[in-house]
Amino acid sequence: MGRYRRGERGPAFATGRPLAAATLLATGTLLATGTLLATATLLAAGVLVAGRSAASTHRSPVPTVIVEPRPPVDAGMFSFEAEGAPPRDGDGRIPNPVTPTGGSPSAPVTCTRTFDSGPHVTSASVNAAIAAVENTMTKPYAICLKGTFTSPLHIWGKHTAPLLTIATAPHATAELKLGEVRPSDASSNEYTGTAGGVSIVDSRGVEVDGLTISGYTTRGTAFTPAGIYVTVQGGGGQGEKSACFLKGDRVCGDIYLIHDTVTAISNSADEVGSSKTWCNNADVDAFGIAVESFGTGAADALQHVVIEDDTIDHTRTGQSETLTVNGDVEDFLVAHNLVYDTDNIGIDAIGWESGTDQARHGYIADNTVANVDTWGNDAYGQWTGSACRPLPENAAGIYDDGGSFLWIDHNVVYNSDQGIDLDVETDKAFTDHLLVTSNTVVDEPGTSLGDPSHGTNPPGVPGPSDNAGHAFEAFYVDAFGAGSWIEDVYAHDNVFENQSQYYGGTSRQEAPVVAVAGNWRDVLIWSNTIEDLGARDRLNLLLEIDAAPATPDAGVIDCTDYGLLSSGDNFAQPDGTTFSTLSAWKAGNSGGWDHDSAVGNPRCPPSSR
Image (cartoon, rainbow, N blue to C red; front, top):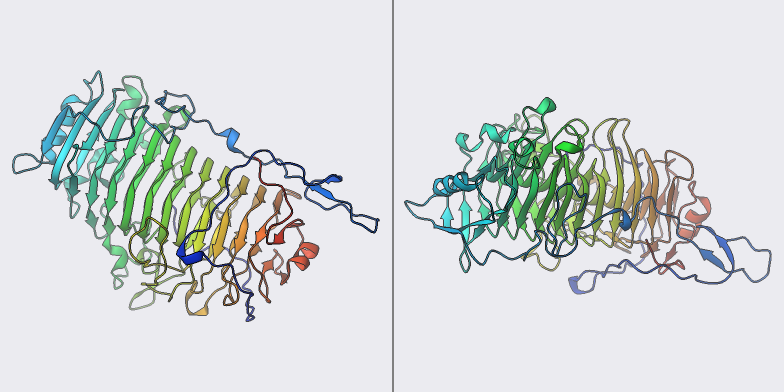
């Protein structure tokens, strides 16, 4: 579940020397990220040297052509449905962000049946209506809601293909205001003790549109509340297969969670502070939105899941995630969501928690994730004899934990413990084919170590930041599990900025902007902007390489546009050697990294992949 990692980190590099002035964000607005460009033109005629400058014996240097290496993964490896086309079973295509169901992305104009909440119209009324029609449908069916409902909604065992929509009625509002999880909420149908405010289990062809799910809570380890919970079972060691695998077209999928608001979902055991039982307890969990599927292979995958235009905020999720896609899920879309003010991972794609299941072939794009911080999350604490004390913060805004073929594109991540983290926690497992493009990651300095630590929010996030400035890094490439590895990574045209001055407790631990660690190979980090706070920043290296690539010449970091360097250390290589200047780093680093990079606009072609 994207567990807390007391990770291997590189050596600490205290500089105690001031940095040069940084390029700051203007008036709190975001730096503009680049976009995918056409094939690069040659910069000058001359000797063709891939990633290296040609040595010249002439008085005037011979111009070189800087060639971007062929990336190990690119956009051409991801297939999308055409606009207006609904997903087709087993086609290996990701739903299109514009029209994910093949129709209008707006709420239904016409309702087949409408429920207006009242003394005689409750969640039980809606659940009975769902059960009556879900497997007799021959065409789309829309159940619309008005008012406030106080118990969960269930879609369990729907195996018919036509789309069943649960939506807010036109020109109305609908809220599930749920309160404490009741034992009856966590049905055995949900397998893991997770209780969904809206639960979609063993089903296909379901859309949830425009609902608000709020205030679903528990305290302890008996239950796991989730605002929206989607799950299927694929047999094998997990038990009998889901109904959608056994009946109808034998397909589980086509699940659409669109325009929903999930707020104040919590497991309050993560904030008690005085309980040794709940301190550093991996079973203290909650979710904002969770999609989980644990099958026995590709035939058991949950396919075509869309999580789009949703808002998830003010959650306390213990050791679980705010928005997660976990296990045997393929061809999924997570786009245009707003996730903020949460005490664990913002968006997560997970593999290997059950056998060989990996979240795969997913597009995570145009999301805004802000204020993600585990400070004060007792599920990640340390018992000190009388109280649960916080450990250094370690939650990513966007996290890959063992996924495969994931494209993370044009997201904004702001004030999170880690910005974008590519990793695998499971021992002897791997994560592969990860494309990271045109994202903006910003971590402000913060005003204090603990909460609240205020800062400026990105556009679209209301109010002040309550969790600013606790970041270890803006971009992290790692393989944390023993004997695990990460391979086939391409990161280009991103802006990575880490100004944090408060990571790691009173020691003010150093926090690099970009770090590469673990067992890695075939990683291309090309044409990115990397910068920190500048003159006031005495802590943050721009680039820290904690481990050499697994095989020689298996990783390229080049054509970086560095913001400003300090008069102290700015770079570090695996043996602990540090470098203060870019020229010294270029000449002396053991990997030949950053040969063509510069402080401001390196002379490199734009990324063309």
